[in-house]
Image 1: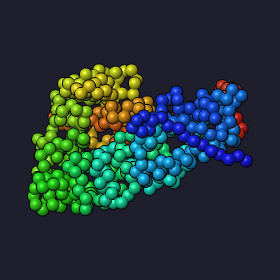
Image 2: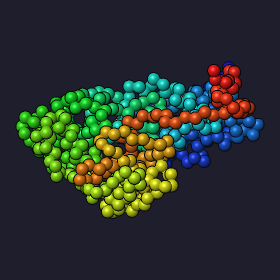
Image 3: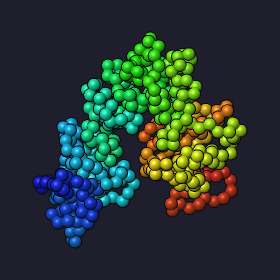
Length: 437
C-alpha cells in the first residue's frame, strides 16, 4: 500500500487566484508531464508515468490518486458553495471543456478525472439549486432566502461554466415550483415579476402548466403601488404599471399569448383591460422576442418563405443578416444585431401556439454552443398578420424531449452478406443470419 497525497497549484496575481493558462495546467508526477489536468490549475500526486516521465500510465496507482483528487475537488466546491467562499477560487475550478463530452473522447487523465469527479459528486448537491436562466440573480437570491433553500451564492453568478459543472455534479436548476411558495409573502422586483410572468406565460402557451395552478395570491403583478397579487388587482380594479406588459411581451413574443393567459386565469373582460389589444404590439430589435405585422397575403406553405420573411423583418429592424439556410450550419440566418452582437437564428413555421416543432441534432448542438446568441424564430400566420416570436438560448429556456425519428438495419463488421433471393434474412447476435419463417 501507499499513502496518497495530492496537491493543487493555482496561478495568482496581486488581487488573488486567477485561472491558469492551458499550457501550464498540467499534471505533475513530482515532475511536469505533458498531460493536461482538464482544469485551469496544476495537480501533483503519486501518479504513474512511462519511462520518459512525460506521459501518464492509467494503472491502479494513478486511478487511486485520481479518485482522491476528485473527492478533494468535490468537497472544496461544496465548502465554497455552502460557505459563500472566494469567487476567484471557484472560477479556477471550472473545467476548461464540457465534462459531459469526455465520455465520447479518447481515454486520458483528463477524461478519467472528469468521470471520477462526477462519481464523487453523486448525492452531494441534490439539495442545492442554481439560478434558472429566466430569472435574474437578485430576485432568485431573494426568493431562495425567503424559503430557506440552498442555492449557489449570488457572488458566483458571473462565473462562466459554473452552472454546467454544477449540473454535471448532480445539481439542479431551480424550477418555478421550487420558488413559487415564496411569492405569497415575498414580492420580487418589477423586473423579476415581469420575468416570472413571462415564464409562466410561456409554460401556459406550451401546455406545461394549467391556469388553475397559478395562485392568485402570488405577488407577481406590477401596479402603481408596487408588485401585488392578482387578487388585489381584481378587487381594487387597478391596471398594470406602465411598461410592465411591454416587459412581459418582449420576452414572450406576442401580446396575444399574454392576453390568452390572463383570459384563462380571469375572464375576457379583465384580460382585455389588463392587456389592451394595441398595447406592446411591436418591440425594438434588441434581440428579445417580438411580433411583426406583415402583408396578410403572405403564405408560409413553402419552407423557404418563413426564412425569407424573418430575414426581411430583421433587416427592417436594423440587423445585418444573411440567409444561410442552404448551408446546413444548424441555423438559417446569421449576422449581427443593431448593437453589434452576433446572432444565429433558426426559423420554425408553426400553425398554432403550442404546436410541437423539432430541432435536429445539429441544430441542438449549435444552439448549445452559441448560447444567448442563438435564437429560435417561431413564425405563424394569424388572420391578417404574421407573428414572429423570438426565443433566445432555447436550450435553457425550453423543455426539450429527445426522440428517435429514424433507424436502419446495419451489417455487422466481418459478417458475410446473405445470399440473395427469398425473404430478406434477419441478423441475430447469437446465431448470425437467419431466414425468417
